[in-house]
Length: 93
Image (tube, rainbow, N blue to C red):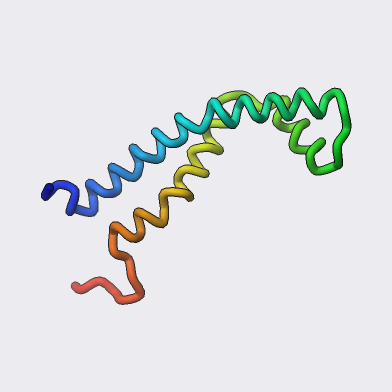
C-alpha cells in the first residue's frame, strides 16, 4: 500500500471522493429543492422559506451539482487534512 502513502495519491483520492459524493447527493437535493419550490408556490410559510423556495423553483440540475460539489469538498476536507498530517509545526525542509 505504498501508493496511498504519497500526498499526491491522497489528493487524487480526495478529488474522486468529492465528485462521487456530489453525484450521490445531487438527485436527493434536487428533488428536495423542487418539492420545496412546489410547496412555496401554492402556500406562503415565512419569508426565508419562501425566498429559498422561489430560487429552488428556478434552479437547474447543474446548479445543484455545483453546490453539492462544494458541500462535499467541505465535508471531506477534515479527513484530508488529517491524512496529510497538516499540523501546527512547519514541514521539515
